[in-house]
Length: 111
Image (cartoon, rainbow, N blue to C red):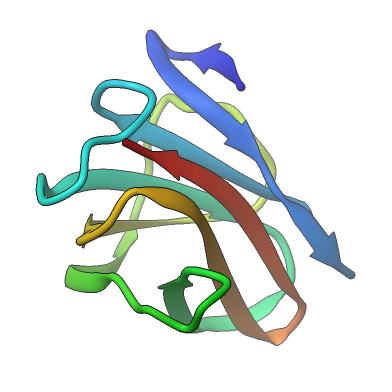
C-alpha cells in the first residue's frame, strides 16, 4: 500500500495487465461503510467484471459502477473506472476485475 494523489493506493496482480486501485477512505477499510475505489487498468475492451469475495465465497455489494472516467490527474497506466463497494464482513477480500483482454485482482483488508 502506498499514497497516490493523497489517497491510499494498492497495486494489483494481473494476467496481461497492470492494475491499480485508489482508495477514497480509511485503511484498513471498514465493514458496512461504502468505499469509493478508482481503478486504473491496462488491457483491451470495457471493464466487464468487478467483484469482491472472501475465501469462503461471501460477496461484497457493488453499490455503483463501474463508471468509466474520461480523465483525471492520477498518473497510472491504463483506462480509469470508478466503483463503490460495501464490504459486509471483516476479512481479506479479493477484488477481481476483468476486461475483454486481461484480468487482475487486488487484496483489501476490511476491519
